[in-house]
Length: 383
Image 1 (cartoon, rainbow, N blue to C red):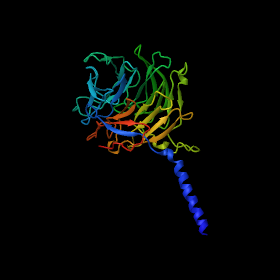
Image 2 (cartoon, rainbow, N blue to C red):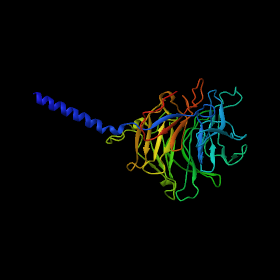
Image 3 (cartoon, one colour):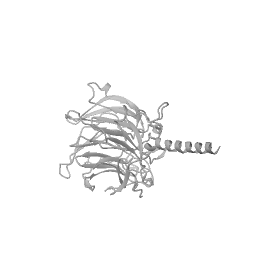
Image 4 (cartoon, one colour):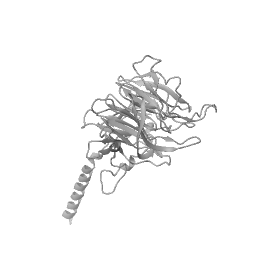
């Protein structure tokens, strides 16, 4: 009896060790570190684009519910410097879109609640677009472009996809919502293509679930669009792969990857139900090599602010795989912030407790960098 008991105990110990080994890949990796705070006022609903080694961030709405039109550059020495605001004819806004072709930045759309205009202005959506030239002298960095021809909207998704053969790429705008005012139209799922050479737009299709506040990440000549929320408060689970240079006709440009939910019969997606959220940020690290390329998802909200963060490996199996990484610092949770890549790290700045202006709105200026793939023993959880 004694020997049988010993054998049973040994079996249990071995079983526990095996179970632990099976879950060893679940260890969260990556390190968040607090960096120099954003140079301007805290805000939600700002936009960003990158030209060369500088990231440009601007617009949004501040804690006094005043829409903004200032822009700031974050350079490779990790310093903030103010650049030209949107030009005189452009109104302040939040929830706009922005993208860059590598030479110029493009900013447009968005919304102004005008909550703090003392009744002198009504809420309004915008369709105007502007081009930013960092090489121009101060006072002349912005140029007015043609208006967006689709429905005016806020929290749409804007991005640029470079051509794989070295020719000029294209800009894209999709999703967004127009659910305020006298004639609300709800959320959208139309897709538009912008030719930077001719300053012209054309609609290329309708695809995916309607939403606003989605994330986009571009790897090579492929864009990945995910997360968001629709006007009914539902969080879409579709995960869209967009390859606009993959075929001559646009009906071949879209495909769906594994949905952001747990499906029966698959073990690798047990935690995918944690991924859906709105007003999160995304950034890409390690894009120089397929072995290191990762798309990251951080912050955002799903009924409440979220701390869990994720990385997607687009080259892991046929449809890629998501894995959880180190949580965002607990005292700094936010939504409607800005995410970008600089010096090989991911970065998150701005954001707040809500995605739209309200009384006593908590705003962030704190900025955090994320180093992927490392132990998080020295993670900075400062307020």
